[in-house]
Image: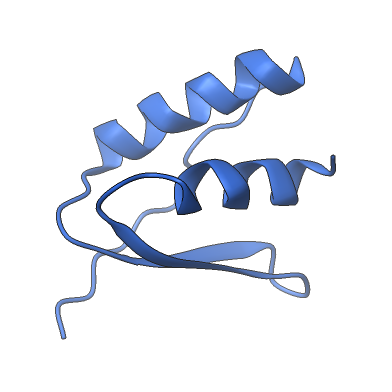
Length: 66
């Protein structure tokens, strides 16, 4: 499984995440969710990192309240 697919699949499987998208050109993920902090996102990426035997980190994090 490709790394963006692994991350997207993991995040999409979480209960409070409604949708996850990955832009190939910008290499940015976007997601719609109930309540998600930067710390929780990093914790979820740590899980994927262990499964994929790679290291994924949050480089940039923005919350948009619509």
